[in-house]
Image 1 (cartoon, rainbow, N blue to C red):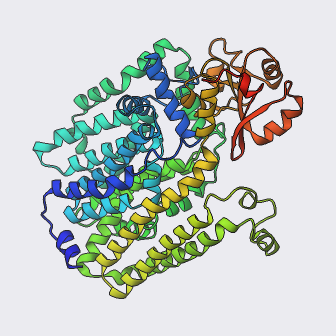
Image 2 (image 1 turned 90 degrees about the vertical axis):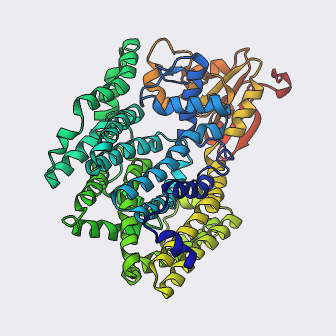
Length: 582
């Protein structure tokens, strides 16, 4: 306890030492076993294959997926992944490296921002809170564009609010950094890279009446820097692909936000429970931090609290109002909430007011104990089906009862122990009635939950969502010729095989690309597939077991099963001894 106080108490402590400690602690949490699991469908396969094709073709302007045009996202995340592949090779670690590094850099960014805005201890607390938010770390370790966007967007907004309070010597570099990172955010995920910063800053300026900041922002030079960084790729890709502009700006922005065209509709309140769950164990304390910050908005440094509140609220409401919702969209809300919560803990540490956290700690502790019990029961949910349906707790035919549980019985016990340890840490900290003890207990228990519990979950997720083993088997089987086929597009199949895939039936996200040029031989219906199957070429097919059972009676010659995993199966149109194996 005395060592903790000795570290966290000093207001003046070398920033480089703090950063070194954060890198040491969270470097392992973010990067440990990063390449252990196969690529998870669908996102990781997609965002790995696009940069692989860029490297293969030497074309870094026009993104392609399964060798057809793919314009849903700008290229920055693809470029970073391509660079990672050049450095580390074509593997899962390289595929996840850029996004994971972005997550770790966001933790360090939050430390720097908290230190600049409020003080050294506030920065430390905020960084530990963000780094031990289970959902933030888990999504950092997945190959997603959203984490790269979160870092770029957070860096832009942090640079602005730091510049607003910096002395004249440093204002310029922070303001120019704001424009640079805004441009990089645009290159990561499109117009929200400028819509979010602009909207948040306008709300902040209007609320605080600090319009004079516009005069010191170096708008002419800053806008020039933004255009130099963001515009060239959009010009080049539009020149080479006249169809790009309408698809990207109309379909991928306006229609995605205003309509259900992407099939990702969720109710308006969707992100409220998602944020509470993904920011555990800090989400309940974050609610208190938001309320407290609103009450202190007119006090000293209140304008900075207003900015963080506007940042979190604007993005949260924007995505809640959208008709297209996915869990990772909420990631840019984490940094401002971590900063507000870190300041709350720091302030109450001075006043030894841990009793103020009693309601939140009671709710969280109870939730952890309930989670521990459910973790033990969950792997046996099929065995408990008669009881669950008989008591009305679960409806008959629910996916909870029909799908293979993600956790094994042993994994359930591990998760139960980790959840119970967090509940115990909260209870013990409550008895000591010291804020720092509570904070340290939550950090430590969450750290183990992330590093150990995430690996336990990933084993089950990989079994259900990764086709790595089947894809590698298909690669061996077709290495000297033959046709590779997928019923519906399997995102990681071309990545692991290095081959273009014939898609049968549902084209999914490849529908737009399938209409550019003559792609008829690569996108076929079942009738065309049957003719292909009966031809002279070896055909290797990856499909769901249900599709195989449906078409098997019509397959002539009879299919040979090469392998299976979960609900997927790999077949070929002849004896494996007759296929051109290496």
